[in-house]
Image (cartoon, one colour):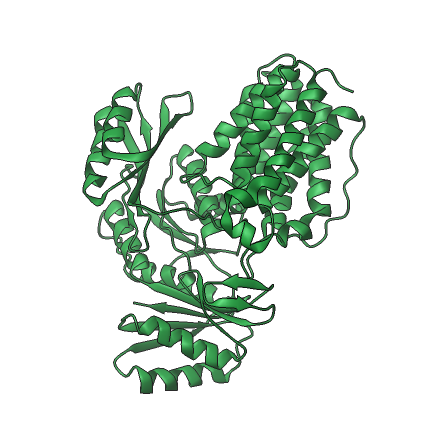
Length: 533
């Protein structure tokens, strides 16, 4: 058993953690609490750790290690950096931040024993919470916090004992997640991201108590944690702030709202987050201006409605671009016809960053088209900004919202105004989808069985049935009943040829004053996408 952490142990940890995630990938995917076909937490964690492993493998082929840090520090930094660039989905991004927090804490430490590991886990927990705009307990955040607390509680310098205490506390916290998050209790499962973190901490214990390299199993099918569940109140204001002191800012924002988070990176850059009323949005931003230089400002309603995005960073050039996440030949062609660069479904931060770089634009807008990819897009924007590119993320949840956003894009107006217009157009477009239930579940529309067809409006199941045409008609009626002048239909790869004609006839007779646009999107998983404006 090791007394201090070394680079070989870091490599064993990464390899062992990847092997464990691959072995339990399907199990973690099945912990998804929703019946829609997006339960990919296990897959996203495997892909994230695969990127971390590749970064370590690339370092091993170099003639020498980085000289400005101890060997274990260099390995941890490479592992964390690889995980960040390969991160997919919310869980992948959060795990990459856990690794970054540990790497930042241990990079310059000469000897890593139990006390140092406990402090690193505390740093990892803080980095994970800082990465999430609205932290929710009962998720991977609770598990990493418990691991840090368990590691610190035993007050030992025994490296293995501290690692075991952290793993044990994480496992106990995972078992409590259904008590913290009712949706987990209703589904009878624990948190998927938390389960992945427990496997990684168990792998850390194994790496510290064994020697030699861990052989990796052949990669099988690799497959985002369930969306966060929290009470939504008011508006979320968030921005990066270049400032020397934020004491006055904290006091000002405390008077304006709640859920205040102001965290610094140690180099004068602060991440500011607060929930405020509509009337306090302007004063919250003005407080940042008074404290320093705010940038990447975003304002997002926490209740359903139109998102507000404000971008204030000066553009390094006049060239602009849009990067859209989409799958399906038809959708790809639609977005490319609008002048956008298309990245495939469930991209990594590296893939989105490559698309931003390839655009050679000084100002880029990202359209992620689902909740999990929004976290990845935010990470890519942060990386691109460090390279001098101005990037804004419009929080689209569906390709139909991205189509609405691109339709109003106007490069003749200032970039900040253009982003606001795109965000408002996306928010004004209600989105629906028809898919096949992947598992038995209890939904707001009642119980469903695996194989049932589901009609969702803004992410919630509203229609359950067995016939595609019937479910599609009922979904359209549900959405158009709330008002709308334009309906956009995007047919999936397996939609029958008669579906378009059936739905056109239905809209013509039932909703004669609604304009209808139909496209063959060719997207997998979703038989039909619907947008109503």
